[in-house]
Length: 309
Image (cartoon, rainbow, N blue to C red; front, top):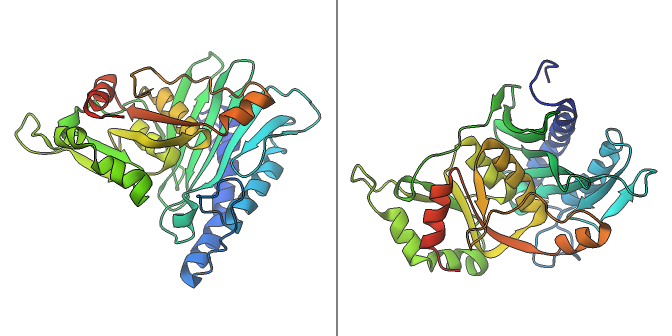
């Protein structure tokens, strides 16, 4: 990537690392899709989640590559217990990783994402996040804290074009595209289908008399990145909740772009995700959050008033 980029140097190095990872894994996933050899593995940590050999390979590969960029850090991956890497026994940085999100679709070459967030334990907040989209042209979503303490968000396409993200949607609910991770029939789709007041509000005529509201499917952290980019207007999770590795990287990117993420009671979700000590990290890795993420606060509140927990 260009050296005169407005993106901080560490963020560029992590973005290059993520791009390299995607370039390595993409042909493997395409081969898995075309041959039907999806390398499914027994998931001992999350019994109801799909796990492939590709997830485990990326988990190990990320840890090795990160040691070339960061001398010491806590490695908190979805695929293993948190561990200290490097000589410092109390490193400031915690690296949160979801090596391969939506892996059951990635091995079909449909959708696949990879998340990484660097969190400062002293600041009690993220300082960098990169979400990679393995199969699409808009390839990277980035947030980073600059030397002045300000957060900025960017999207980078496969041809290297960098785009600042600072204009999320101003839509209201009757004209909004709202997404939800609705793939699981019992756990997620049925709860969504039961939100009649929300669906009626989304289907109501907009100011021009046309029914413009839409419901769409989206996945993990990238769903909040799509809101940050203005590609969608909001995303909501009121059924099972998102784990920290699915929510937090996209949450930080949306925050940096000027959007909002609230819980179902209307409280802003803080950037302090509880990654400040090994006991806290272990606890955080086993909890889930329900949330509404939107391009503007008014839309988030419209959605909140329309849904029932």
